[in-house]
Length: 550
Image 1 (cartoon, helix red, strand yellow):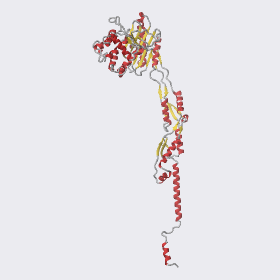
Image 2 (cartoon, helix red, strand yellow):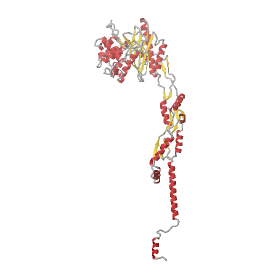
Image 3 (cartoon, helix red, strand yellow):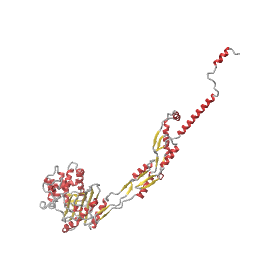
Image 4 (cartoon, helix red, strand yellow):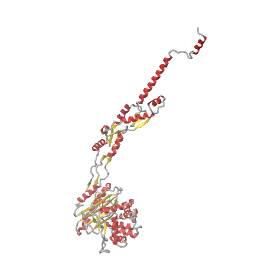
C-alpha cells in the first residue's frame, strides 16, 4: 500500500497533453515530405540554372529560358541562312559557308550564362528563389562571328565578271562634227558592297540586300573624243595638224568640270591682234579708279575694232607716255600670271606713227621647239596661254579668284574682270569662232590674223544656254608665199577654224548641234564701224556694252 508521499509524486508527473497514439510517425512523415519538397525544389532550380536567363538576347535572337543546346541550335540555324544579293533585278544567293562563315556560339553563350551568375552564389540564388526574391537578369549579347574577307572579295569579282556591263565606245562623225555617247555601263562598287554584305551576314532578319552599282555613263563622251574628232576633221580636210608645213594648235577647257584638251597648245604662233587682250589686262592692272570715257573708248577701239593705234596708245599710257616702258610692263604682267610664251617687244604696226619702231628684249620662253609656225619675233603667244588668260578672267569675274588671286594686293577685282569680258562680248565679226556657234549664243572673244603669212587665231569664252561655258583658243598656220597668204588664210584657214569651233560647240551642246555649216555667214568678217558694234564716244558702258543700242 502506497504512502501519502507516493501519491504526491504521482501527481507531479501527470501528463499535460493527452497521449496520441502514432504522433511520432506523423512527425517523421512531415519531415520526409518537407525534405522531398526541398529536394524537388532544389532539383527544379538546378535544372533552371542550366538554362539561360529569361530576359536575354544573343546576337539579336531571343534565347531567354532556352538551354545552351537549344540556343546554339537556334543561332546556328538562323545565321546559316543564305544572304540574297540583288544586282539590279537579278537575285544572287550567297551561302555563308562559301566565305568561311564561323559563328562563335560558345563564347556568346558563356557570356549569356554569366549574366545569371551575377546575382551571387548558387545557394544565395536558391534562397532568393525560395523566398521569391529572384532578380530578373537581362542583357543583350552581341554577335561574335567571322569570315574570310578575301573569299567574299572573290565572290564579288565573280559577280562583277558575270553582271558588270562596260560602256560601248563613244564615237564621232567628221562629216557633221558630232560626238556620240556609247551605251551606259554598270559596275559593282567593291568597297561599298563589302559593307552592305557584312551588314546582311551579321543580321538575323535582314538577309536580303541590293549591291551598290555605279553607272559609268557621264552623259557626254570623254573630252579625248573631242580631241580626236578635231584631229580627224582637220585630216579629212587635208590639213595635218602636226605637219611640216601645217600646224594646228587647239586648247579647250570645260569651265564647269575643269577638264581640258590641248592639241599642240604650247607651240608658238604670231599673236597678231590677240595680244591686245594682255594689253587691256595690264591697263586695268595699273588703274586705281574706274576708266573714264576717253579710256573706255580707246579700249573699245582696241578690242572691238582691233585698232593698232588705240592699242599703242594704251601702252603709252601704261608706260607713262613711254611706249617701250609700257611694252615691258605688259610682258611683266603676262609672265607674272603664267603666260610664259606671250610677249610683245615692239609697238604694233602703225606706219603713221611708228615707221621705224624700236624693240625691247623679249622674255625667255618655253614654247614647244619641235614645231615652227614662223612666228613674229616681236609678238607671240600660244593657244594654251590665251586659253589660260580667258580662264583667269572668268574665274576673277565669277569667283573672285583667277587674276584677283594672281595679284593679291588688289590690282584686280571681280568688277574689273567682268568689265573686260563684257567689252569683248561686243566683238561681232560673225566669222571664225562665232561662225561655229548659233548666232544668238553669247561669246566674249578676241581674234587675230596676218596678211603677210597664212596665220589665223582666236580665243574666247562661249556661254551655251545650258549653262556649261567653255574656253576655246585656236591657232592655225600654213606655210605659203606672201602673195598667196591672204587667199590661203581667208579661204582655207578661216573655214577650218570655224569647223573646229563647230565641233566644240556640238560636243558641249548636242541638243542644239550645228550639223552643217551655217548658211547665214557673211563673206568676210564684219567691220566694227560699218556693222555697228563700236559704241559711240561717250556711250561706252563697260557694265552693259550693248546698252547704247537700246
